[in-house]
Image (tube, rainbow, N blue to C red; front, top):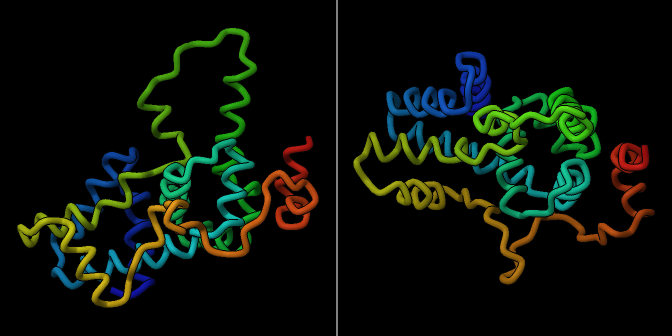
Length: 207
């Protein structure tokens, strides 16, 4: 499996299903019908792609746009960003400031604004809320589930197989042991630095 096949699977899973649960199931089913080597290939491309998004500037964009500084949440956000497809992921990972321009992001912010300012708030459907969150943790585990089904081995063996081929994940992030997003670290409280690095997001915050 090459990188084009990897992205084709990610994007087809979105077109073929209408919920996150069915999307994950679709991917697990597809991978489970492939040779083990292709499952490992998929996992390597997933790891490589996630690592590409594990940068301090993308973390800052996530922080400022969605108002969350959770490192676990950032990991799940990167998974969600992958779920949006190759074009969106590559545009935002190459230039995190573009996050605020993405239609999916603007839609989520609009929903939050409508809910926050509604004079007749109604309880939100938990299932719908889950579908709307800019985080997609379970998408990261599809290769593990497929690997376990096909080999009968513990899913952790998949990570070991990928590491023998040089694919090691930058997640989870643990500052205490020096595991942080890659790139030059900067002070998120520095408004001038924010405006320099993420000018569109800085303008959005000041509207």
